View 1: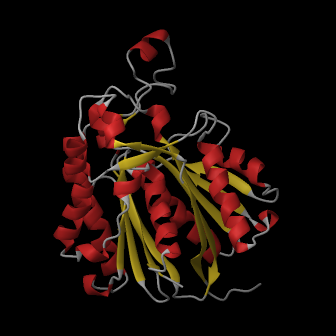
View 2: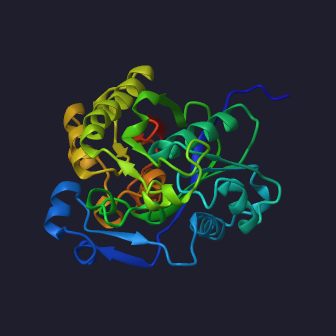
View 3: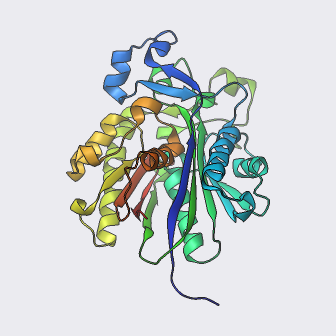
Length: 331
């Protein structure tokens, strides 16, 4: 038995964004809003929306198949699939299992992580642990959301923020001390009502009443979330750099959950971190929930922004309430 310590790294990335683009001007025709109002408060200009025949498993599978093709990966070599989503195709079977069937990973286990907008950092943490423990050698992390399917399109405070999208991230072994150094995960269930979907579970099963009252839509108390999001996303970064004896000045890239440009700016300001080193693509895609950071990784990778040895910190905040992040040496 080989007991030599090893690390875990992100070895491949891919993403899929639906073809349909919904601009702020399109939203002006749906709700009482304007391009100026949306952009000023969120930093969003447009977002992607799935087609009628696309579900979360479909866009997740498309991201995975793109990764397999571009990196010449044999689907049968994947040991485990972890899907981060809070907009699953259905409560069960797991979306990860539906994706597994669509992408030919016949030798892989599969399960979902439902951590809302911080689901990807949790999934990446789990994948890293499996690799480091030698339980598995290839873990495919998929983050995918069809937020448009759970939106109340009459609520201008939520429908303007969210978009659809997916990304696939392959995690494999690397030398100890490189790759994903560690993670930080926390939760506070007492704040669950700040971001929730009230009905559809065992507490409020689907009924004529819950449907008529719109309780199967995402509900969010934005003002209350803003302060705790900034505080806790900043805490994630400080906890990670302190644990691994790093300094803010050592960080090459901060990749925050793309919730709202004002939240991201406030986090960078609180950390005294350069805005130009804080990656953002929210203007193009909106908040794709669990998929935001994973899509950022793929976009940065394709643009050649990530260099060998770069120190990267991710930080996310979502319903639950949950928050967390990862500290990564890119290789």
